[in-house]
Image 1 (cartoon, one colour):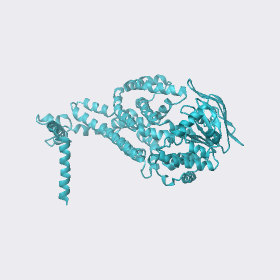
Image 2: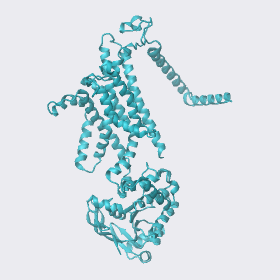
Image 3: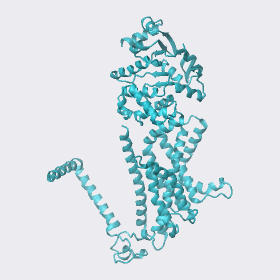
Image 4: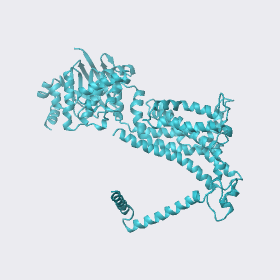
Length: 245
Length: 369
């Protein structure tokens, strides 16, 4: 199995606060990993380190054999291969949906505008909202915005997708439309690292479950083991809280 | 039908007036006092400025050639304005001491100025690209036309004056300060410590000093810093001072806009692989400048008026020319006429800027809800 992401003894501090403690993680090609854990456990920070939105201070992070250092060239290479979807969508409000998606292909990949827009349209069809192309993000519902954000990320043709709580800011009735797109993506073989509390989604798509608490990976297991027979007490407590609410 | 509409609209007016002007006794009294006040001031001013005023001739029909011909100086009963001073000094107000036979060059520049600005102001303008090209060409045309060059005689800036100096300092100052202020604002938020502290020191120093001081400094001290023989003329020195001053203020206005951009937008751009400058140009500035429009226009209006301070370093802007006109024995003591005229000219430009900013705010709001 080809290794695409490798974290080795990764440590990070925010001033005095030790957010990540000796994180080891290996992701192979096509793997879908769901990360959960209480807030403040470092799960978002961990995936944000993988495309260098946060810098780690100790340890090694390697993506496709390229190690993340302060070298901007390496960061650029990795960011081209790694897409990211945020909790707050982070669409650019002054650009139309189509421009939001075609922006990076035009400027980063130097693609002709026409080709970039064709690609943008094809991804909009994939997330099932081609009719919204000319609108501005502010005119869309949360679920539609998040689907545009996914399309925007996919338009750069990444082979790894990071999802940072993609449904946490959505109204309940919109969660499904976003999860459906993510499930479809998983079925197509995308390598995915997803921070989420949607346990139904996790059961459907995850190959591996990770539970984090206080900056450490407490438990890593297959969904079957994780949900039916968790080893650590903290995992059990967390699961009982999240599944019963 | 039209009668019904009329009575309806009249009813509407009555309702509005009743609700807003006469809803209580106090309100009614205030309304009446306000109406009387406005009426008195308004009629007085209009009488003075227009109905009882002399334009080129006095009430006896004689052409006014000096202040003794003004109606108010002939007959004690007359009090109207004597606008003849503005006519007599018109060329100076517009061009300063620019040679009369060459003033057509200034007129052409004045006429081209709107064409140079219009492309920047209205983004839906047909052929906007051509207008923008012209905008970048305009400084060279203006330099050639105003200062001279091959085929045109040289007119030194010491001959420039009046509206020409006011507009030159205002327009060039704003035009040069704008890009500079963007760099300063970005620099102030930079993660690079040296660039950041340079920008902070520059901005805070300039903002901590009155413009007059900067003008004096530029006028007196600039030559000390430059090698011997390099002696920039007065107008250029004033332009340097005005530009630096404006850029510091505008930079702070733009920084306000930059701060309003959510960090997530920058992270999203980073995650997509956009470079710093691409992110700045495509994501940050379009949003930040939009937010900063009202304060930016504020500083522009402020600067435009502040150009009149160049009077103290011996340049004759509009106000300077006005004061020179008043110092002339043939026209002295016509203070009101001169200052009202100057105010009117400043008002036209500043009010124009203010309305444009309102238009832009409205337009940008509807562009993307």
